[in-house]
Image 1 (cartoon, rainbow, N blue to C red):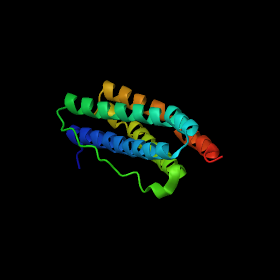
Image 2: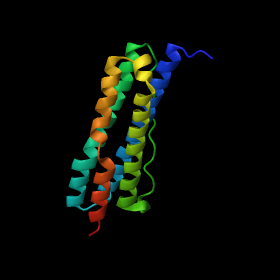
Image 3: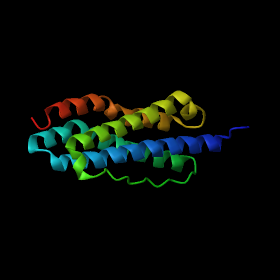
Image 4: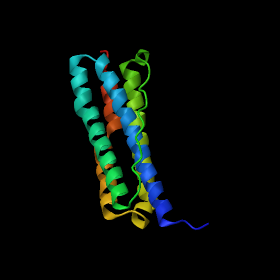
Length: 152
């Protein structure tokens, strides 16, 4: 079966949207965690984890919209996924956020490794994918470090 450029571009667009949705979930979870933390832990969460996730999320949405516009594709809607019940506690929200951020990073890494951004994408998209992933570097470790001090 032949694989058309338009199909490949749609696949790229869908992958970026999926990563953006994961980052949106991470942001929602971190917002819920922040509400349950003391001021010092909350400030640390915001600085070390929330801001990088928000930066990556904004970059993902811009890369998605820019790529769609450059290639005449419809911009997909991003889904709001619920963070979960407050009873999971700050630690549960932080763990879920780290998992979602890691999932977004994996999606983008697989996309980059697939060569689709080279074959059906463009230079701006390739730069955008790299820029999305940069702030995500170290999120799991920072999350574990924060969790080790929560409630102590």
